[in-house]
Image 1 (cartoon, rainbow, N blue to C red):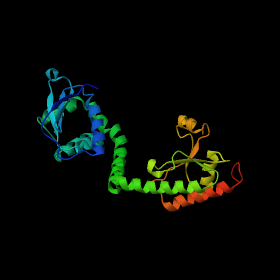
Image 2: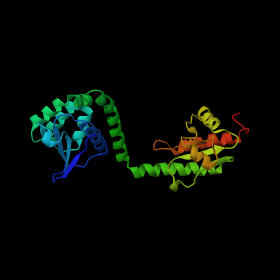
Image 3: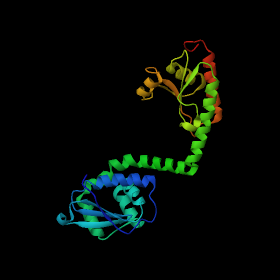
Image 4: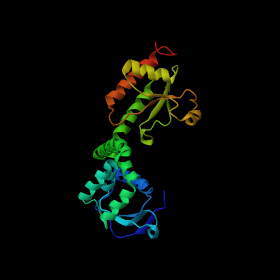
Length: 258
């Protein structure tokens, strides 16, 4: 990618960029870094970003002013069509629109890349990401964390009461994320996971969890552990079902499922 020249300006966009728009911006800048013909300058939020050939060597030069960060998302998801729709919406302007079109035409392979394979791949991803971000913003990060912390505390309290269960790590829900690892004496972690799924329809992770060094430190290598990860869509009733199922396993004959 060619170096980007940054020159402070005074203009600013009309609204702050969302996480989705910032991600789209990074991808668009990556594409513009491959500009082979002409010189294109983006004016955005008080800065100039210059792509392509040096100004003194470029016959074609144009300056695009980004008025709204949604411009990047529109261009990434819809290519040339998105570029046109963003222009009509007033999300960007140009000092010489004809020069912009000529530069893009000379670098048509880049625009086709956005309109073709990349747009087809990125479209579903960005729309899904946008929906996920909107959902989190609507619920509120603190509310989600409060819910997960309550489930974790309930799970830790219940595991503490079960015989032959060893909880790994802290037993304080305030000091950890909503991930609880444990082992059941006399059962391998894979046996526990299989039994929970078979008997109660509970899906959980078993093994080293891509952290063999951590398990060496905990003394659980190479077997690993069972891991519960309660989340926003889990309930206290489901935690209670999981604890009841584990209680039955703990009461079973030592060495595996009966």
